[in-house]
Amino acid sequence: MREIQQYIKEKAERLEERLTVYMEESEEVPLRLREAMAYSLLAGGKRLRPVLVLAVCESLGGNEEKALPFGCAVEMIHTYSLIHDDLPAMDDDDYRRGRLTNHKVYGDAMAILAGDALLTKAFGIFAEASLQAGLEEKTALSLIREGSRRTGGEGMVGGQVKDILGESRSVNLEQLRDIHRSKTGDLIVYSVRLGAWVAGASPVEMDALTRYAERLGLAFQIQDDVLNVIGDREKMGKPVGSDEEKNKATYPALLGLEESRDWVRRLVEEAKDLVRSEPGIDSTRLMGIADYLTNRDQ
Amino acid sequence: MREIQQYIKEKAERLEERLTVYMEESEEVPLRLREAMAYSLLAGGKRLRPVLVLAVCESLGGNEEKALPFGCAVEMIHTYSLIHDDLPAMDDDDYRRGRLTNHKVYGDAMAILAGDALLTKAFGIFAEASLQAGLEEKTALSLIREGSRRTGGEGMVGGQVKDILGESRSVNLEQLRDIHRSKTGDLIVYSVRLGAWVAGASPVEMDALTRYAERLGLAFQIQDDVLNVIGDREKMGKPVGSDEEKNKATYPALLGLEESRDWVRRLVEEAKDLVRSEPGIDSTRLMGIADYLTNRDQ
Image (cartoon, rainbow over all chains, first blue to last red):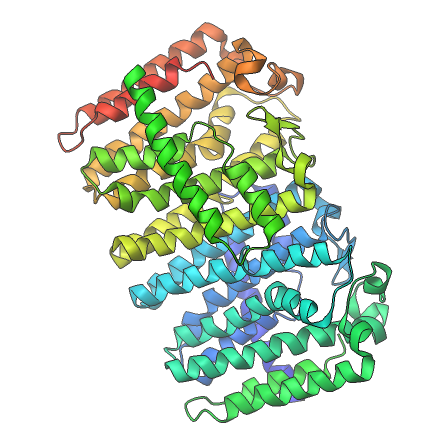
């Protein structure tokens, strides 16, 4: 457990460095906008998604340096979605990771535009990094197309819409899963697939890793709900029980706390089995990350 | 003049059809989100940017069918920028093209997400259309990278930021040009370059067309400011004189009305000369479009 924490920490630091370079390089971006982008992008956090990009690439013997820009782009997409989700028009959150949210510091207009700019930048990096990594044309363009699908109206953005619409009516377990499959699952799956693409995974490996990621994504979301019930304010950096206040459907509310935790454990075991049984995948880190996610307390 | 109007109308209809197909095809997008996206995307308008994609492609003897998806993607980016610009947190406009703005109909949250989804979709189409059009790998990826730069923090989004920051202080002519170069110019230039890429323009042709587009973009913006002063409410679909009310810097305010109109005429002549002098470009339509933009009254 300590070893994987150390691994994640090291990868997160590498990502942080590269993300800082991306922000510093953007000299043609107006300073105020660049500050707003960097404020949220460089605010720390688990960096789960880009760490997955790197870890999956490594697990297949791929070149980490080639995977790094893809990880950064994924983190930009994740960050833009958080900035927009926190807006008064959406979740209206004042704090994120223990600091004021973007719009509380820079105002709503700048927060919207910082999100737009991060999203747009991400697709530019996908293209540039594909050129640099020498990916095959079809691979590179398919990867960008899938990125659009998994993060847009069919994926992450669509999930946020379903989540908002779900607040005003009662949602059952199947609907809740569907919301999270797109809202948080798609980007996690995409991160894993990016790492696999860069490393040149075989179709069988790609399939196993995709299913690993699907389980990881769901486990991560259930665990988030569980922590929202039992966590404490300091550790989460946002008021605990806020889901309940908003009358949001959660796994603990639908299944109970113990059943939810059991499900997380089962999903993690399935995820680990999937990567362990593929001979071409060095599954050590990927299993460690899955375990880490169930044992985390924030 | 009537001929070019007819030409633009026909192309706009083709685009409208294809845009409608894109919206209808998006079955995995939640219905409410799809409605919000389609509301603004299919709201008519001049379709100047995608018409330029098609006209430039045609002027080089390229295949219009291949250019069509690129035109649609550009229109999605333009539409997303309008939806976000109209938000209460930004320009707070209630009407656009004579109809209620997106957030007035669907609410602020859905308007933000509809914009996000349109932007994300556009990059997916760039990738897919590049695959379908059989563009060279380097061309396709460079095109996507340039799209990110011209529409993100270095381009269109950055221009909107400069515009917002400019409202609170006095802006001189050079600064105003700089704002518009990125806020509206970059997407117009990109549209022209997309059409040229698809048709396989030579570097010299690409250069001439880029400079044509730069002049067109600036002329278009100055003309917009002029029309804002002299137009009438019905024709513009928004209250005339609204720039003045917001104390926004405009070309007529800085240069006077006559000087502004003269500048538009000079820019259009320059633009026409640039395409007329390239033997590989059939400049008829491109000159017609340039003339049309100066003579338009809306």
